[in-house]
Image (cartoon, rainbow, N blue to C red; front, side):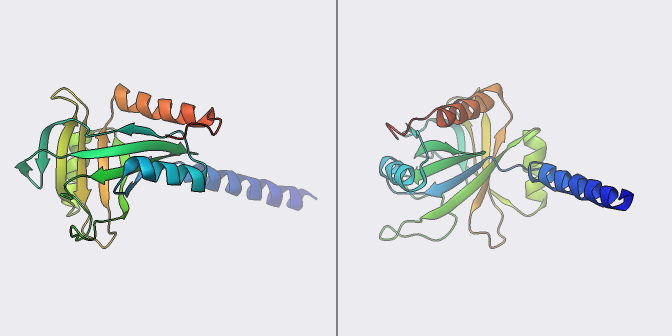
Amino acid sequence: LTKMIKIKLHYVAEREKRQNMIFQSEKPIIQIAYAVEDVRQAAQIWSEKFNIGPFYVNEHIPLANSYVRGAWEPFDHSSAYGWKENLMIELICDHEQKLSPSAVSPEKPFSGIHHVAWIAPDFEAECQALENQDCLKVLSAQNGNENGMKLAWFDPQNGMNHFYEIYEDTDDIREFYAFLSGKARNWDGRKPV
């Protein structure tokens, strides 16, 4: 009987250890973004197919200090943001198709996973660590104005066929994520966008 109890306790401890590991990571992905042509239409489809909502749309998002592939250049994009369980779903439209993870043409714009994102506790150190791993910085900017949250996109150049996005750890980004997850928890299925 004692041996059975020890085995059971060992099994329970191992199970708890595995469950806790699911949420522990140096780079916990908090967002997955999909490239779309029309964020409102895509949000409606995602809501219907996957019961995600509500989505919040931000069109032509203002960015300051925007550098695309190392050169100062504006970057025009719109996004719809929704929440499912522990993950933000972003539907992103790159209006000028400047930053796509794979080759595109006007006739066939990129669609599919655009990027995964995480919040970097030390933004500059995370940028340096990614560059040290041969990731190519394809976008750096600040959200809204020159005092806004820093963000960067990296091309891992490793066959993943999507970018990495990192955010500076700010109260604003944490409040935005908390807002979305709270709205999703209390969503009654009406007004998906």
